[in-house]
Length: 301
Image 1 (cartoon, rainbow, N blue to C red):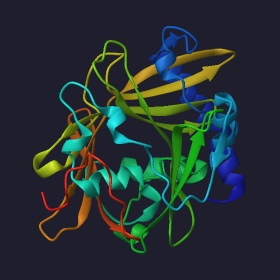
Image 2 (cartoon, rainbow, N blue to C red):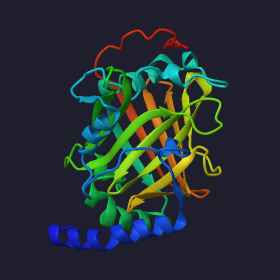
Image 3 (cartoon, rainbow, N blue to C red):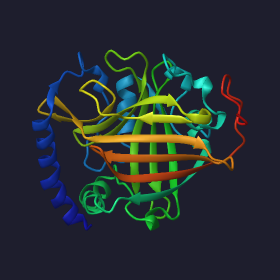
């Protein structure tokens, strides 16, 4: 899309989409009752990585780049609670989340025919233009794989509070995802969920994923269909000093597992309402020998 057409599309579509989500949502108080929806936003239409510093400033900390062993989570045991124990996971699964930067990924994508036209339209008019949530549409889009960058966000004491995971197409360098990963306990929940926020101009898309230990020490993450305040997908927008939030009919399931040949893989299924729209399949390869992780289930399990 040319620069002029991109600016025109942004000037028309972005305010309209924010107005729609304001109308569909409810007003929320991010400093009080709805603090669980506090998440980074972008100050510009092109998201990129500028939100990283803004989020670190909010936490009174800093962004650390270039750590070869950086992970989306400092310790998966922080997710422990009734019905989940990180020590039951395969060592490879836990290592991927705690040392994400040490892994290389290849990805395959498959859209359901019914949803492909809509996905292509959203990708062209929105995802590629803003550099966010630009789901690959064709197998050739990801034929050369994705590059992955993990930026650790710490608080003023140096403790990891979140991590930015920025993924770009290896063939073009274009952003596919720019997400903020952390742990968060939802209202009334008995244990934390995995929280992923995708910053957008004056708002964001957030997903709360409930972790489960699957067969053979695999990890299953789900964003089910629940009421407001439960796991699932939310869209927030800010307008004239107020914030509005709405649940989106998007449901995801991730299965991170080791296959019969000892290869770590992730199957990611995204559905709209109850209909599956797209599946992404990742092959994950460790770039360096992993360190031993206390309490993790052995790789031979």
